[in-house]
Structures are given as C-alpha cells and as structure tokens.
Image (cartoon, rainbow, N blue to C red):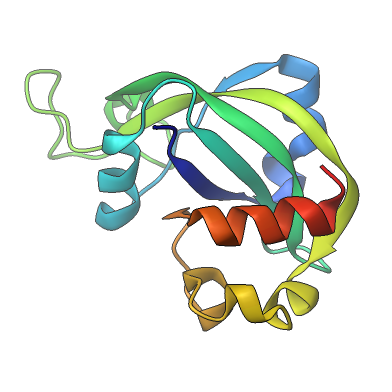
Amino acid sequence: MTGRWLMKSEPDVFGIDDLARVKVEGWNGVRNYQARNFMKTMKTGDEILFYHSNAEPPGVAGLARVAKTAYPDPTQFDRKSDYFEPRATTADPVWYQVDVRFVRKAPRFVPLDELRGMPELAAMPLVNKSRLSVQPVTDAQWAAIVKAAGL
C-alpha cells in the first residue's frame, strides 16, 4: 500500500518549481523528531502533497513521490551548515532525510484558507494549526485535495 504525505517547504528556499527543475532532491534540514520519524517510515513510491509554507498565501502547490527511503541527513555533520547537529556521528546519526521526485505542479494552487473550509479535512493536522513539516494524509484527505487542485 502506498503511503500518502504532506511535506512543507518555503517556496523562497525550495519550491515546487525548484523541484521541477532538479527532478530529485534530498529533503534535508528537518529538525523535528515527529517529522523525522514519519520520514523514517516512508517507502519508495509514497505520494507527497508538496506544500508551500511561509508564503502568501500558503498552500498545496503540486505532487511528488518518495524516490529514496530515509538515510542520514548529511547537513547534520557539516559544521558550517545551519542544520549542524553536534550530537550526531556517522555511527549514530540523529537526523534523516528522504529523496523526493517531482511528479506534477498543481494546475490550481490550493490555498490554506480554502483547505480549512473543506469538511473532509476537518481532522487534518494541517488545518488544525499544526506546524509539523511532514505529516501523514488519509486517503479521503488526499482525494479531496487532489480534486481541488485539478490533479
């Protein structure tokens, strides 16, 4: 069974157009344990709603898939990185990332305000003030968002 996820990225840092250009990218820099643990359960081929956060407006911008399962995030070992983690060692990494592959830009961007108004999404962490950057999506939530986005 394919898992379904929502992953947030700031479009001025790395947006759906950037993923379309590079095709596959490591989803690094996640520094929340729950989000990390979700990534560690992802399987190759899992589907992703690519969400633009810290944007005006924030919302769902496209689709991606997991291209490579979780592996140690290399930024945790780089002392010059904003994501350096002094507790991490190569033998005992703290943070993980997955690689994501571009699938499609949404024909219609779906803003957060619209998502909040959809009854099918009432229980979705995204619409309940969750700041979690990686979160699971149910089949019903997925279907509602994909339909709204024209995907």
